[in-house]
Structure formats: C-alpha cells, structure tokens
Length: 515
Length: 106
Image (cartoon, rainbow over the protein chains, first blue to last red):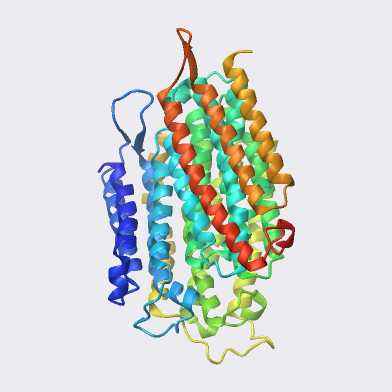
C-alpha cells in the first residue's frame, strides 16, 4: 500500500472527528471521538501488520516528476517497525482516554456508564490532535528526504505542544507547554539550519543524494551533522537538552504521556537515520561523543529519578535514562564501525539491542504510565508517599504495573533483559577497547541502579502498609475500559518475550536497511 | 564577499539576535518574537543556500522557495500556539513576566 495512505487514514480521521463533532454532541454521544480514533489506529495497525507479514521490502514513492527536488516517501522494515509501535500505543492511548479524559476534564463520576452531558469539552480537538501526533511520527519514519522529515516533524511537534498544554485550566500545564514549545522549537530550528546547510552542499535533500555529497567528510557537513543531532536531541531528551521532559510529562494528560514516551523515540530515529544511513559512522567519528552523551544521560537521569516524589516525574526521568541506554547503544555501534571495521558482529548486536530496547521501553513505559494514571484518578494524588500501599486495592492495575516495571528493570525472563544483554554483549565484543569496556561497566551499574529504583517503587506501591495519610477504604479497581489497554500491554510485554526469535529476525531485516 | 556569504552572514546575525532576545527578555511575548526572529534567520539561511546568479539575474531554486514557504507557514502555526499559551499564562498569573512563573524551575 502507498505509505501516504497510512498517514492519510489518520489525518482523515482527525478531520472527520472535528467535522462530525456538532452532530454527535447533539446526539449526546461524546465518546464517539475516541471510538473513531481507535478505529483509525486499528486500521493503521492492520495495514502495517500486513506489510510486515509480506516481507517489508523497501520501496519509495515519489510525488510528481522524478527530479531531486520533489518530495518522496519510503517504506522499509525500520519504518514499519516503528510505525507499528507508534500506532499500537496510539490505539492504547485512545481507548484509555475515552474514560480517563472525561474524569480528568470534567470530574464526571468514573463508574457511570452513560455520559449525557452536552457541554463544550474540547474532546474533538483532543482526539484530532492525538491522531495528527501519531500521523506526524509515522510520517517522520517514512520520509525519504530531509524536508519531508522536517514537515512531519513539525506536525508532530505542534500537536504535542497543544496536547501538553491541553489542560489549560491548570497553571502547570500552560507553563510546561510554553517551556516545551520554546525549547523544542529552538531544537527544530537548529535542525532546519543543519538541513539548510546540507541543501547548500548537496543541492538536493534526498537521503541518498545527501549521502553522496557528504561522503568524503568536510567541515560544513560536520557542522550540519552537529546541528541536526542537537536539534533532534532536544526532542529525544538527551541530557543537556532534557529539562522540558519531566515538566511536560507530569503536566500532560496521562494518555498523552504514553505517546510522549514514543515522541522521544522519533528523535532517536531521526538521529539514528541521519547518522548511520546518511552521514555514515566510518567517515564521521561520532561514536565516542554519542557514548559520552549516553553515559551522561543515563547517569544523571537515574540519580535524579531516585529523588523524585511525584510518580509521573519518576517515570519521566526513567524515560530519559532509557534514552541514555539507547544513545549509548548507538554510540557503541558507531564506534565499532569506525575503530574496528572488521568487527561487524558486535556493531550489529548493539543496533539490534537498541531497536529491541525501543520496543521494550515503549511497552514498559506505556504500561507503567497508564497504571500510574489509574492510581492518580482513583486516589487524586500523584505523590508516591501518599500512594503507598494502594496496590492491594487495585489488583489488576498493580499486576500490570508490576509487569511494566519488571520489564523496564530488565528482570531476566522478560524481554527488557534481553535488549540490555544485547547492548552489553556488544560492548564486550571488542575486548581490547578500553573505552567500550568502561562504558559497558557504567551501563551495567546504571541498569542495576535503575532496577533498584523500579523495584523500590513497586514495593512501596504494592506491598507497603498504607501510611498515616490514608486507609484506602473506598478505593476500587479502575473501570474496565481503562483496564483493557493495561491488560493488552501487559500481554504484549509477555508476548514479546515469548516471540523473541521472530522479532529478532525482523530486526535483522532492519539492520540490512541501516548498515 | 559573494552574495551567498552576505546572505548567510545576515541570517547568522538574525539567529544570534533572536537567541539573545529569548535568553535575556523577561516578557513572554518578547520571547515569542525572539523565536520568530530565529525562524526568519533560518529562512534566510535556506534562501542563501538556494540563490544563484544566472546571466546577471538572481534566481532561486524551486526547492528552496517551497521550503521557505512551508517554513513560514509552520512558524505561523507555532507563533499562534505560543501566543495562545502565553494568554493562558496571563489568565493564571495576571502577568506576562517570566520571572513570576518560576514554579517549574526554568
């Protein structure tokens, strides 16, 4: 199928929701937006699954005459893999939003089955923005030239700014939204400046044309690479540029936070693609810089996470730490390809670990954020201290949170362990290299520290006796429509573990695209 | 200096001016104006990369023109959004002064 159609389904559904909203509101069916959004995400997911099953052969679609100036889209194994993660989490978020947003926005009672208010809630815009956000992310992974990538990037960015500031009646949301907007727009502009320089060098923005133009390596290309990495690194929340993320994650509605966890993956994709596919690690020796950034990111975020008292901020810092693991994996692969060109095996291991970790982190973090949202609306508090011991009251939520946190912690049978093991074994793959050895040791220490943090959180929520702040006498399990995405995501975590072989085979296809 | 270099130097000047405004100004609307100035600088950088002199006349590549047009549209959307968020901040705090909204630790 034409890759454009996948994006058009989502954008069409967004328009449909906004246009049909007055009719449905008159009919007092205010959940319809969520239903249409879920259907659109399901359709996208099915199309992508069919493409993946058909072998995911790489192809490009050019709009207009085939000159180096026209826009074009591509569809390969990497874009299918990431798009499936994005639209799958989008589906979970939109199912979860149907009930959550009504409570969050209007404080309507949760267990009432039929909502019969006829008020202006802005839900049509909410679901439309959710759809354009995912459409933008999928478009970024399918772009075949830098300018198409930038356009879809801005589609994603503008949708996510408005969604972070969606709860505009709270000071926290507007303030975090403004901060996110200023930082991320500056990042996008830095990337656009880098893209402009590449255009000056190559005369075209197609990835293969740029690749041919920057092949030898020169100062201008190095500068534009730095601008692109800084620009996309703001969205990927690499540490010097991370400070928007905890605020935005704790201020945004919880279902959006799930997507924010994949928005940062879009930044990682843009860095990965421009470094490995366009610039080439063998010419530009950016491996040690990426390893350093990764170590800085994970160490800072893991220590900062332990000091948080707010459960959403804790999970947000843990997202930054996981970006650190991913960036360090990329750095290891780039370093091996530059310094030890004969050792192609460890580089492939590192990239496979990175790609598997992107999937694991998306599932695990989505699961823990959605569970945290269930606690938050039931207890009305985000403080970990006042959520202590709430676990036994909400057994299904706590069980899902447990699966998610154990997956993030990398407890052995779950797939979070295997992705970290792949990165570690890549780091030990060239024993003579001291830099890689040191980086791997820091990685292992960080993983242990992070695992301790996750297990501590789980212990406090699930097993500790309730503190003096409250006995949770009246707290019930979350409503079924909110539990459904939790159960699906927990099942998906376990399914990924069981189906590790086919997934690794698919990742092998992706590696053929990247390397 | 060639035409490209003059344009590119101008664009760098605009970018620096915009960054200075964002970093030093304390008024939300002025920060938004600073963002807009940086955007203009980047647009000028694209123009400086796309401009050619053919037979004594200035021409610009089609790709550079379409990039600038789309970039202007994107910047308009971002400015509108930023101003609406600034308005909501004003409704909460009664001021556009960024020093008054330190609750999130800039």
